[in-house]
Length: 452
Image 1 (cartoon, rainbow, N blue to C red):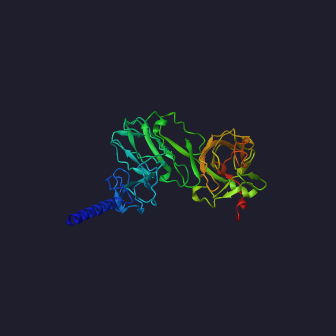
Image 2: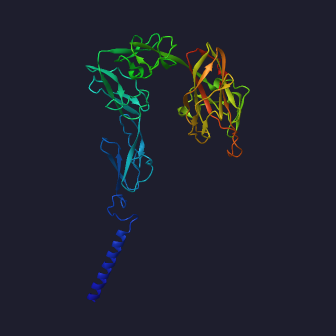
Image 3: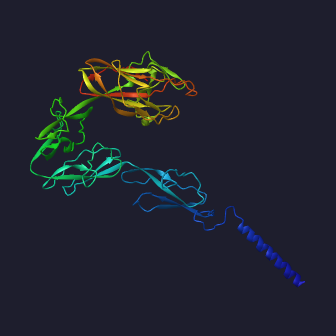
């Protein structure tokens, strides 16, 4: 009997132990295998590593959260000359990290950065020190005061230390850049070119820049300075040998005597499309039309992203022959006025050229540089930002009234655009700019937008 009881008890204990083993192994998640991915962490925790993602960055910070929980987004980090763009799953910052996603494994997230400023450094190659400058990405630098070096003449700034390739100060700077001073032996037989601002009240007693080189040096070797700037609606045009700007300086001639050059300035006039004569006109849109002043569209829902110069533009020009015109008075006849356009595009990309878009000045079509209007955004609530297309045509203006007309000159083939009423490809027109030394006026139709 005792032997039977001992056997029964042993069997019972074996059953209990087997049940306990099965119960311990039966969990809602995988077994903890020690995998670094974090599998099997349920009931424990996961680690989130925030990698600042650039060379020389501070040590990564870590956060520990419960398994299957979310992590709070940390305060945005700072980096000199960069803008933080968010946290990403990959170091290339192509896949955004979702802070609402429950975490079941250890994870590293990476900071994304966009370059905002660059540094232009000046290596004077043994000359006097020239301080570096910080610029916005894509900006240009003003040429600094020339360095000096005993027994040498400064010959300009170059992209290489051997001073073989000249640096152009009109070049946009998109990355940290170093330029190098060039030097020639001072033989004591020198001439100087002095560049004058050439307007009343200019700084530095009117002197913008001076440069010295050997007598007989080609003008082009005098390292022409970056274009000067002037407050107000003015744009530098060219250097002239006289203050009246009647004779342009030829940089391909040799300078045999010290010379003074004078800047020519053009006035920059802005003529808004929404102030042209719209009454009596009609237009076509993608799914509806507009007439008269309704063709002037207000930037009321898209915010600063559209970047219309006066918060208004003209649209609905989607049919062959649609046009707007600018009636402008000039106090003198000129043959070298420069025309620029500020445009955008909606619905469809288009390359504007003389084959599908006409620019007329006083009834004569003018040649102009093609304009690639790409990046159209889909939907009524999205608008591609306006851009200025500089110096697309040189035009002649007569004394008195001039008419600049922008005309749509194309037709959409039947079936080319589905589910729309558009009959031609056309830009949205913000404004035009005319650069000239003539004095221009016009009568803007401000009533087009009053009260709207």
